[in-house]
Image 1 (cartoon, one colour):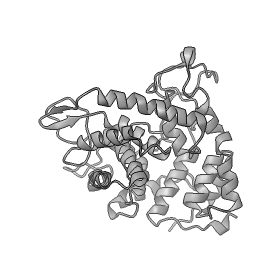
Image 2: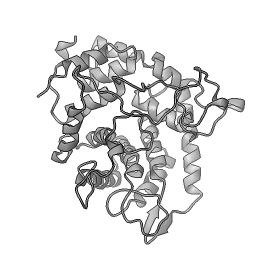
Image 3: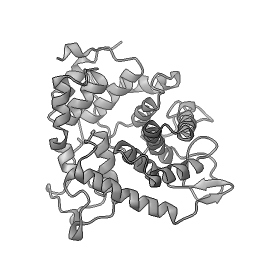
Length: 335
């Protein structure tokens, strides 16, 4: 078993308190009441990534952008913020969460689900990401969130996932549409204890596990090599590391069917104990400008790292390995 102590030390030296806090809590196994954890957690709102995401969040007037604009809209920023453990009652975050809830609730309540050959066609990942955000930010018991959750569950396909493909011949769930939806329903179930959501999470988890995360269910071959590249953030895209992170949250971190993905993940670790970024779905800011009106599509306000060792990828890799029982380290080494 590889000793990843060097990786943990590297993350604990990060300038970003979110990285340090999550590493202490989820990887190093630190006492949540320890001075180190409390200090890192209290610094999250002032961390460089969180501050960048908060800048322009919920812009109004001339700075207003659609919540789904890639990747500067509130919808995407909120997903990143909750994954960085932004505090629950951060004012601008709470306000943005209510706005996105109003937008998606209205969109869903004003339309009937299209069905072809008896299967609902739905952009489920949009609502899945919403459910994840609202549940993490204390809105899971809002009647509108419950409505969204029930509609999403009602659109689940027999194989456990979701698909928006209008082609009546489409019969297999989309991994892209299903992964974020699994995350959202997992967070919703944890927040509410919903038995209906728990069953939906079980079926969606089985979809990915039965494919051993990235293999064709008919041939056993790798379904798409693009899925195996280490990227962060993944937004709505399917990715094998993100799948392991979400399946671990759903309680399947040590499922034997994760073993091939875990082996692949360990093989990608560099000699220094870190994982490097292998591709990006985002563009960097032009000249550092935060003028939301002039940003190109798919521009990010956060520099997540476009090459070399990557903090978020390394952090999520270590979390997946720990969930599977493959991480040999102890907090006392880093205190």
